[in-house]
Length: 154
Image 1 (spheres, rainbow, N blue to C red):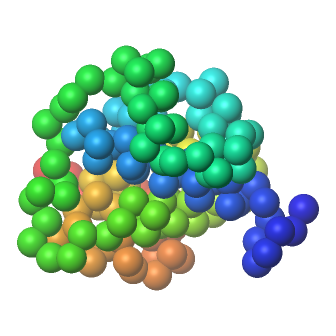
Image 2 (tube, rainbow, N blue to C red):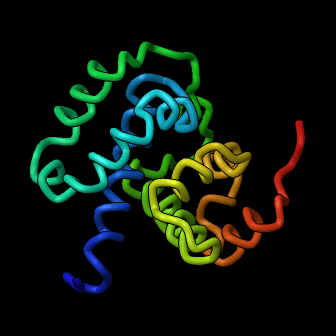
C-alpha cells in the first residue's frame, strides 16, 4: 500500500533502522550488537508495529527494548569520535533503510533477513564512521560496495 512517496513497509523499515541507530547511540553499542541483542523476533515486531511505535516518543520505545533485551552500556562512541557535524539517527536510519531494501530486492529475501545480513556485515563500520563521507554517498554506490564485499579490512 502506498502511503505518501513510498510503500508503507519501507517507511516502517526506516523507523526500525532509525530505532536501532538510536538504541546504539544511547547504549554506546555498535548497531550490529543491537541487532544481535534485539533478535529476529523483536525486529519483526518493531517492523510490524512501527506505525504504532512511531506515534510514541522514540526514547520510551528505546527504553522498552533496552530493558526487555537487557542491553547494557558499551564503549562504542562514533558520535564522540566525530570531528564534524554528526548525522542524526534519522539520517543514518535512512542510509540503512535504503541498503536493506536494495539487498532484500536484489537477493529476493524478506526485509528482516536482509536487515540482519546488512547489520552483520562490514558495512556497519563504513556507515558508522562519521569522519568519512561514505554514509552520505550515493545509495547505489553503498549497495554496490555491500554486494561486492568491498569492505576494508583492518
